[in-house]
Length: 359
Image 1 (cartoon, rainbow, N blue to C red):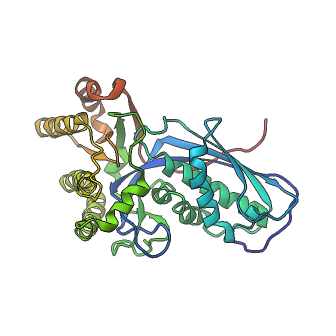
Image 2: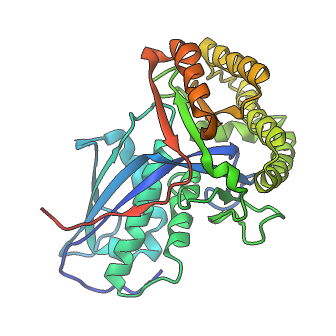
Image 3: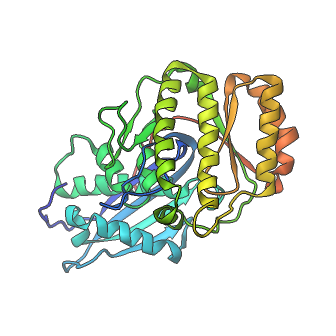
């Protein structure tokens, strides 16, 4: 980004809507060198109907600032608990985003799903914020970028690692893998060549526990540092990436389903054998998994589950069999959900720049 400070007296504004994502191969564990660099490659689908909308107003100030200055609101209310993470993000991009030295920010964000509902709100929120910051710096400097989406992916990971994968309609790949030449640790890239059949798949998020998870992602990643199984996990994740990329290209459903579910269970197994012994699944999480396995064995329908670092279950399925699968969900799975709560989403959404014309 432009390093030279350019004085401006006008207010700048940018607004983006960005999707959450659900990982098929999990990012769990960081490299010791660098900032927010993954210990293994990961891949995810964006959840196009489960989004964060973020608007950033940059107000010029008279003096040159020595650190980021901002106000933050989530769903029109102050959210002090989020401010340290936002401040850390802005400090990490401080040297390359010269508008931060001459502007105070007013950041307003909202989700179209409840925070803490088992959907990656930080991925959606930081991807939207990163897109706004790139756009604002371009406005401020007057210098366009060749690949603004890549730059947004790069800086978004400095706020939330998984946010970098929320930038593309195609599956987002983050981390070095031999199968995608441009894949790297600094930012995510889109996977091309996915079989057309996967474009009809959807996700249902089954809310087993609507409360915020008891263990933050940061704490979870730190537990890998002293986990005696960490190296085995990284080797397994590498193999999972090989299998998933091949299955997505060739529409190998048995491999896709087995690998996605294995990755979900490995994530929770690593937490259970970590030094602090986290158990984030609930009894109804296991009950839902068992019902999915039984239903799939009886019907041979294309569906599978995955999990984030919490109790809630993502049901991935081919919407061409939607009537049968929705009937199964409503009759068998919703009674196991908290207040029968669930969210549905198509897969493969892009971030969208919104109009900033003030009413």
